[in-house]
Image (cartoon, rainbow, N blue to C red; front, top):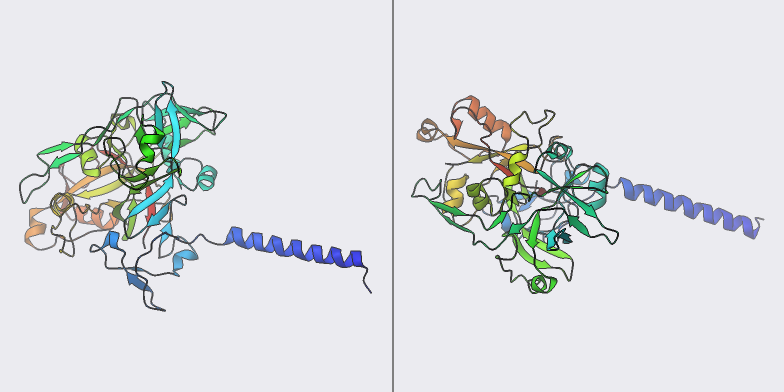
Length: 410
């Protein structure tokens, strides 16, 4: 007969073994794409389901869950890329932690964390990992900050004026782009950049877009229910609540290698681009090195293709482009991004725009359609049916936008 102490030891050993096994299982289990609001579910045992409201009618069907991406995020299916975000697929919004800080001069700074150059910190904070952002540590492209003992972020410089009223007047049909006038809803000073390096942290560059500046907690808490004042906060904000420590932001629908995705537009270096993106005009981004090959040392940005003269009309099954965005009731241009996490290694939240046009020949022969894959666009460029607005094949022309990726829909 076993002694009582021996029985206890065996039971304890068994419990420890079980705990270790469960912990290992939890650590190895893939993260599923969990959201607050998923939309309409599909029929039982069906591999597809109706597209949620935020991407309809541009997409009618999306991959259902359980999906292959829940086994491996590189496989087909939904993937929550920014783990700190709660997603509402019906509204197309994301809710993330609101970060309180201040300038050295005392003004309050309200920001969000979206990307970082350190993979461990990315996993810790539930944000995107971007190795290429390290090349943005040059000139005014990255500003400095420190973290005080109580956790407060203190920024050396960088102010944003959120008071301007966002306004755009489209051009005359059928060429709604370029617009007759464009006024960004927020303007950063010469020192403002969303890229930040902390003096007393790891040697990492963070992407920390500002969502409000020099606004009190009392002022912002009045916007917890969604009644936001766009002269106080970023144009992408749909609710902000220091009391709860959260901010809700409108996402943008785009594509990468044929897959629909949601991303967040926060800054741009050009007034027209900033207006069209609903972003902060940020001159400091001009110091960001770009226009090299995507994976070249020194290249801090990735490419995003923007069609100017794609098909228009919200009911057109292949609508796409800036002309559509300016004429089709506020629906987005359906831009095409390059590499993102789970698909490629060269992701950066800083994107260099490749604005392109369908040629008259392509339009006359009925070849114009919606393209959702960077390779397909480059292929069309090689065939001469899609050209840069600067002439010649698709190319960067000097425009930069800060667009962290948030959610892969398929």
